[in-house]
Length: 559
Image (cartoon, rainbow, N blue to C red; front, side, top):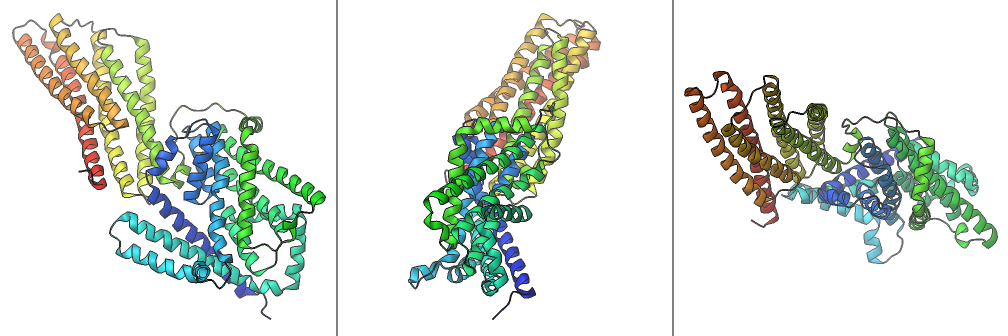
């Protein structure tokens, strides 16, 4: 009789390593395939808990980890990109999404002589998928097909880990001490404690459920004993969010509190219902021997049931979080949390949203600066100055974060988006510098009590009007590429260049014939030049967006 020894422990640890690595490869590749689709999912999110729930299910099914999703939520809320009320629905959905892993792993428990069943058993399917995945990875030309190959390889590695873990536990079925230990699981509170502790150590409910399924393949453990362990696993997975909430703002800490309170309340309610139900009705499934399939069923029923039960009480969960965590004074400066990098594609979408915010601020500052020539207002100058400090923070942090995202595994389309966003930020940085110079000229005009002639005012009014139309249109183009709007900007730029050329000629003639003081020369020319240079940077952005649009359409086969 084989005994559980050091080599079994090494096999168990090796199996766990394969399992974790396979899950990492598979989830990273699935996210890479999803690419921009995750952005579209995120766009559907509102304060409606049902939409948040759907988002949580979808994202977790792709990432294969409710812990990773919750950590991302902490990052999103900490960065001010999401409200706590939006995050609650996503947390609930992530508990349902994580059940997909248990169903995949239930293949390990397939039994029977039917050729189809034999085909889907891990011993048969794993080597085949590994070969297909390797073939796709090395032969496929497109990155998307290579990623599909990596998914198959990741799944094969994951299932190999499952086989190793199951094999390492085989001697335990013949170990009297371990069999006696299993009788402790008949105590539901002990089962919850074991599930909580194990998952808190591993920091993944998917992995701990997988280990439970592997154990069930070799050791007789009842469904009644498995249920409390699964309940505890949901509590244990909260440890990742709790650790992640250290050093974040109060709203982000509330995400971890909601996650913990949701899972504790769900476990308490279901545990009480289970104990009462079993006492009065002697539930038949309690004494049935568990296998990977019915563990997946129990896991799904518990998570879906908990979510449906607590979904109407989203506001209550939010109030609990508000009671536990006191409000802090939050900074208005942009802080893009490192936790967002767990999902590079979603992080990129959020960065793009912040780039749009920065672009809007720069547009407003430019328009305010040009208005100061007509009516100088110190209050507007203060608004511009406050915006400047925020813009500076945005510029540096956005560029730094985009570089960090570029070091992650990304779909090719998103790699191009990063390069485009960096160039857009650079051009708007230059526009912001020009806006500062225009503001300085307006301040100089007021300070020196310079009066413009009617002719100069008329020319300047036409140039400024064209400039405002160009910056407004360019801002809209950054938000969404519009070829018609790009064409309009190109026409406006041509008109503005002609207006500036004519105005400069008039100015030079006025200087020459003495109708304008010589000290106004550089002052006026710099103003015209800066306004024209703004339009040149806008054209750079339009050309960039147009080229990218053609590349995307060509890849889709529309050009």
